[in-house]
Image (cartoon, rainbow over the protein chains, first blue to last red):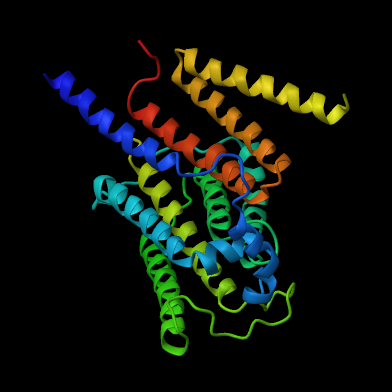
Length: 226
Length: 82
């Protein structure tokens, strides 16, 4: 009986999926939206990087949702794993070569991450990538030094402030413009660092937020190891 | 056939070998290292397919962060598959 029901439900699903997909013509060009983005990005948003202009400007609301999803995931993990007593990590120090190498590489990795998210509207990359790169740098220090600590409070403040900046940038569009996340700042000259309106502000906020979230997540995870 | 295509085919063979290795391997730590090797080559492929931003994400998250999360999980459970 259950099998018959399952087959029946699947058949209904299959029928509707098929009838939807049959309406889409196969093999024809349907990239009007893509052509519009490629042709008008620089004029409309001032960002040279088309991917960034789509992620932050045209589809900015989706990005806010993604940031929220990441925030919820990190919060859930922290809620499960966080220990009030503040256990110390008891891992051993790494070898001398790893420690010296990590010490030399750590500032460079953080600098690369900051570069990636500050230049998000000019070069490939952006907030998510830069934040992830910064978190890998912190991970390198976590693995090499037993004494390396991050302040939990500072991470929480950075995360919250960055989220607030993102939402306030959205509301500024609502107040002085017509819609949420609309650009209200001057676009500037395309290709310069100070251009593209609110895109750099949002991407810097996203970079800080993602970096702080992933760092806190790693800190929580590594503290559980005895 | 030029050199670039030969290199791409070599990388494609390596990625398949690494995937089979990480599925078949009983030592889970080695299997995780196999998946991170997949991520390295995948980020090269993303770069060759002109998606450098996806390549950056794959390199940072696939190679470093997800690997360390798997390693912590293995350390807290068991290293060898039965």
